Image (cartoon, rainbow, N blue to C red):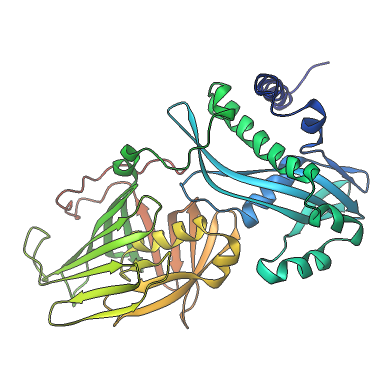
Length: 410
């Protein structure tokens, strides 16, 4: 019987995983068979890939700019609700090694809707953290499953290890790494050289009624964001603004600098004023040209934001991708430059896989199309954001920043 290309690809992938299981000896055939088993709801098979992808889309987060993937062990089923214990991991391939990013292991309850012999996932619930964990387990899951979730016996400890091993083996196959990469000692830090490699670059244009009113040209490296903003309207308060944001190896902002230039000058000229901000360990301190420094308590994960810069706003989206859904619900902490030492929370909500809304304070929500953490376009009232690979002929390249096509979204 003939096989489709997708089925053939799936069989090849399965054979490769079986070979890795045999080489590492970390899982038995019985354990491997229990991972990602499909559920049957009203006579319709619910594919594991759809459950795992849905969980990533609604509760996934990353720390190294990679992709998070999930695997699960079935816990049970009650009508149209299916219950799993899931493990999710962000894994990257670097120099024939796997590098671990973010990870989470938790029970999850999916609600399935079946209509005309077609199944659709309509929701997923996971337990709350801290002292609300046990009550939320009892609210979300049927009593018959509680012992499997609360039980800290060896069987379920091994199940979590088995799921993690499965994801590492799947990643080794996906990245084309040698089998030994799956069972090698864990690595969590990217090599230092990655810090200086551009991971995004180009220019954003702010368009109002068909006219470009502002251009933000930037380069984003692993440990540094640099850019220059140029207004293109009469009556602007500054001629250009150059910014620089430095990041620690773990992705936290450590320092930012903003320089403003006179109208009619280029970034080659000396700035009128420069504002420097240091982040942590106890406070966020902003240096002002003609007044005493201002300080606010430091909040881990704070992102500086100079309102006209779309590239700096993109860092808010990047931070939202990298934190857990529970923390994301609180809002990404943002320090607004030149705003009298204000620390605010910015809400980033995914309303579709490639669309987010961003809002803070009493401001109306702005909607952006995104690819991963990268902003592709946006709309905020009558203002439109457009991403350009290379600035147009009226834009002058910033010294030290070479326009180039942005790298593909990771």
